[in-house]
Amino acid sequence: MEWSDVRIFLAVAREGTLGAAGRSLKLSHPTISRRLRALEDATGQTLFQRTSDGYVLTEEGSAVLSMAEHMEESALAIERRLAGDVHKLEGTLRISSADWFGAWVLPPVIAAFSKTYPHVDMEILTGTRLFSLAQREADVAFRISPFTEADVVQRKLIEMPYGAYAAADQAPPRAGDGHGCALVTMDTSLGAFPDIDWLKSKLPHARIIVRSNNRNVQAQMSSAGVGIAVLPRPVGDKQPNLQRLDLGEDPPSRDIWMGYHRDIRRSGRLRAFVDLAVALLSKIR
Image (cartoon, rainbow, N blue to C red; front, top):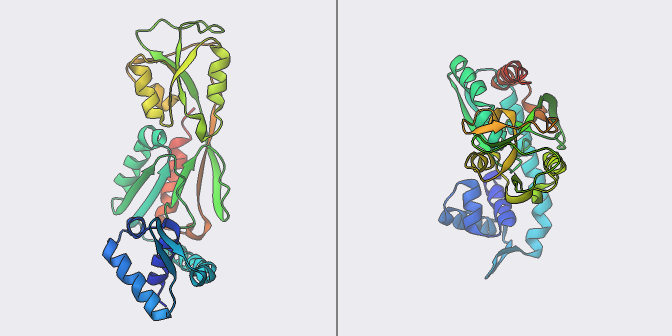
């Protein structure tokens, strides 16, 4: 049994449809169907039940699922170890971060790195999804909370300052009041955010009218006069139509953590990027 066939089996088991499995592996629907049929013919077992809702593991498929996952784990470990032994400063480096961090904090780091190491291609993956370091979805990631995955080398990189902002042509609100004020905040379905509690405490009579999981969207909404927003300083300070408000104290800061899988810690391109990121981002106060 080839590893490439096992990857297809796992993708169909996880995604539930051939189309979704094909997209996750960047293969066509007919290719997934053909390879899965060949795998079942080779093993003499029906691994999936075809239903109107998609593909469901049969008893035989369920019995080999954990073994296929162990095979995947070993294959990924080999891939990470081989990547970690590459000392040449070339190849691809995948970097994961929140949208605002990728848009407003990382560009100077990426520019300096690409100028120094022009043979390294970079992929910047942003959003709320946490890309897996173990599965090589990303090589290095920046997050606002410590990493919980096993075998991740991590460090607290910086303490990111935040500020409260409103449109430049709006009259600043009075701390402790907030009557007539509108707020633009994070979507709390993603978890707790200290800045929301802080903003509510400073403007207790203000009303939240827009929630978004994207700091860039919040910045643009606030710039348009929709409401007051708390933003990371590298985002808010760079918006020409925003003013930073004095509400008696600054919003709570957030720690920025950087992490990568220990199996690729010897990678030359990773080490070069990490060292440069530490040197440049440590200047943020």
